[in-house]
Image (tube, rainbow, N blue to C red):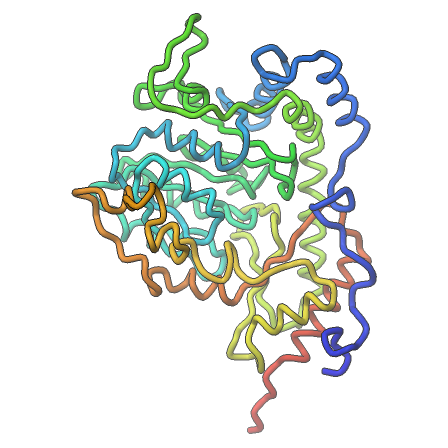
Length: 419
């Protein structure tokens, strides 16, 4: 115990780990600089006059083998665009996981739909198909599937449920760039898929997102119109067919995105190789890494592992403090130590003024978002440590990360009871 850095001992990690927050953990080159300079010199910073956004959309669509790709301002905007495309009636229900970013649920509530939280699989922490099935009602319109931590959800089971009940499927691939489920890219199973290019993602444009689909039109509206003020620009003139925001991506973002997309395989391969190596280094340590399903290829947005509180002499929060002192860059639980439905936005209906819409609308199902709603998710949020991951980690970093985890877990292990 005296050797722990939190108690004054030497840190296991020498210096600072590469971080997504700055150039130490991001890979940019002259290509991105040249692309930015080209846009600046052209004076065309908007998609309305430039060409980079259209080129980025085409390249991304080709990468995923889909007909349509629409670049937007960020990942939350991508998901909102998808929900607008669905066109739910107020009070319609959308099933999603409580172990995901709040950007997944905001679009649901913003369109006056009711978020229905299905529990997660205790091993993968992805949405549990059996829980999805249990939560379907006559008002259910869609399933929103987040491939959390970059690991594919059980898409065979989820798509079977969607077909059985005629449900729309939105894939949230913000953390799952180039993840594969049984040889097929995540993002190509559902009706629509959404991506984020925020600073921490596998490839980045600072902020930015993409929506992809093979559908030409859905529920009387085109996908592109849903992020462009309901405006069918292709017809010429000005018209606004329905309520929709302006979520345009800038030409500067698209220019960076084009160059980052060319390097995406490199970024993903590096993340996966580093994660696989750390899993090897943690052999024999009393932790449970969150690994991809068999037959799938996860891409490690985070490297996450679970602790068993029954085997610890201190709370998980104390373990995290000690890991931080050793130099680990991480936190407990995703999206935090409580699931999404425990935040005031959902539990206290902090939405549109004092109205509480959509939760208080007449005729909608009143859901109790109390503790115990999704017990597996609640446990996962309290027992999982998520470490930020990048493509710039080297063997020396992985050795030190492994040593830090081994050191802290051993120090705080509950003493074995004598026979």
